[in-house]
Length: 433
Image (cartoon, rainbow, N blue to C red):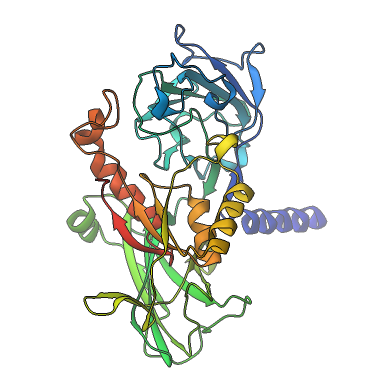
């Protein structure tokens, strides 16, 4: 009996250790797909065996023949859109019933609607924005779940370039403990930078804590070699770890009962490596949420340390040195591969541009795949991160201007939250022309 108890206790410790870490599972494999504008599949109980099995990212328009009669027109690549349906079956173990579980889409073109087990999760018209839905309320544990995504690219023309159609960027299934760093919940700034030292401020948004619960936040910063820059026990000018105690009054006053709290910690990094076009040096901040001495969440944020300004006499100044901006407008498609995002194909594009002398990218005319910004961070490109091609006045009869008034604030907020820590981003563009 004692041996059994010891084994049980060990298993509990192991289980807690495993559950302490957030997971973000690639959810790209084994989707079912059909093009059909006449039927409603939102209430599917199981995958349709007759549907095509494929992996995302996927662009169905590139599979069509070029068609001079396509309503997309020559500007849209003369390739048809249509109405596409995706479904995916998956299971979640009962052991995860205490977790926050969410589905994350890096990009779906366009006008997507998502259901889980027949329950509506939401609608996003913007085909370039990243978004997520919490699944907890409708999940079945230890049973089959079915996720259905409708993609409506049937309303044409809606683009002035080849848009592609479908779930054309990555999909992720994320699991966290109830108390966790929020999605896109870290914001890292470098308000004071010199060759001798840099002040790095890490702002963290935490969700899920109850009013009578306390937790602490610890942030460690690592250099590009994986060495910790400052240890907790080092004496510095700034706070490295702080415990936040919730009270009902503070939640009511500041967040209207939403269990959200923000925390800020600062570091002084001596002799920092500055991020530049020729030497794109990257640091990593690891934010830990600690409850009763246990790490219950860990969130990584890559960032760079640099300064820049625009001067009327000297132009663009990066880290105190003049840099001539040699940029291109870069649309999201990958040529004959269509729009289904492929990291190596995008990297190859950037390598060719780099060899030409290019050092800047304008994401024409929409938020890019997050991995493109990762590549720009690593390869030393500066980026104009663009939000929209149009506002309230359309450039095509059925484009985003129809949804702009209702959706532009949410879309812009999500873009800024997602992309704000990338050192490559030096200009935010709120619109084209």
